[in-house]
Amino acid sequence: MEKKVMDKYIEEFMKRYEHYKEDAKIRKELFTGNSSYRFTAQTYYEDPDSLEENFRNSVQSVGRNKDAAIRVYKQFLDFLKEKGISVRVNFPPIPVSNSFERLMYIAKYFHDSDKKISKLSEKLWVDNRTIEKDLRKLRGNDKDPLQICGKVFTIPDIDRKKDKLTFASTVHPLFLTLNLTQVIVMLKGLKAMSENPMYKNYARTTAADIWEQLSDYAKKRIHFVLSELLPDDLTWYESLEKSDNNLFYTEYACSVNNDVIGDCLKNNKKFCVEVQEGDESKIYTNCCRCRFELASDNEENITFMSEQGEKTIPFKNILRSAYTPEELL
Image: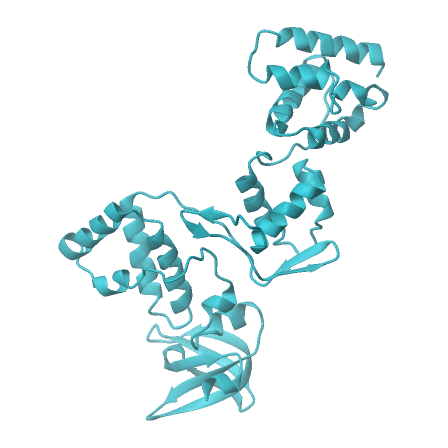
């Protein structure tokens, strides 16, 4: 594409938006100003396919107006499309000037262990310094940690090797916006799940996270509903008040207190169990290769291989589970 043709398009584009006050300053700086991130300083006219790279380089150099610059570039692409020039550009999937949005995106991005840190700046159109600052904040190494609803959100168990990160537990930031009836239904469901030995700690920590986000009014309403309208044992709900300030727990943290089977089954770890057999209990060590089956009485049976051989028992007969035999002694 000739430079004079593109310059003509830019001139037309600027005239179209000259009366639009929104993003007027950044639009002028991008196309007609003398800023270091001015788009016309790029070699766009030599290779239209380089538009994405030029857009990205420009936005990475912009200060606080990155999202405004991205909006302007999207408008410019729409304008070029009207002129018969269709160019595909992979814009960032989130508002990149919003640090909270970036942190939530990064927390999910590294679920795939093959993802590279160096690719994040290309994906989000921010510089490497911003990415490194976000990673420090996620790990809790920043003096100003991220807080949500008054609770600290950090992922301390992050292992960094060269250009990759691995999490001890994948993090799924879900901040639900529910009406009060939905909250009650979810809490009642979690209460029922907490009666299952394998899910007890997971259900309880999830319920506690929800409870901590409720207002005093909501808690009072739930007490009224569960005592007067939908009778339920309030003791469990009242016990949900948390003693710490954490919003995220690793699977290991959810698996303490002799309840590790969920973590071990999901992540293919060996475990030890104490099982009720008649009037006595017995410990099985180095258990693996588990499977669950539904018995005729709708009870779950678990079959596993241990040092003592293969064993099939009702799941409810498991008294305790741990990573090592010493934890059960």
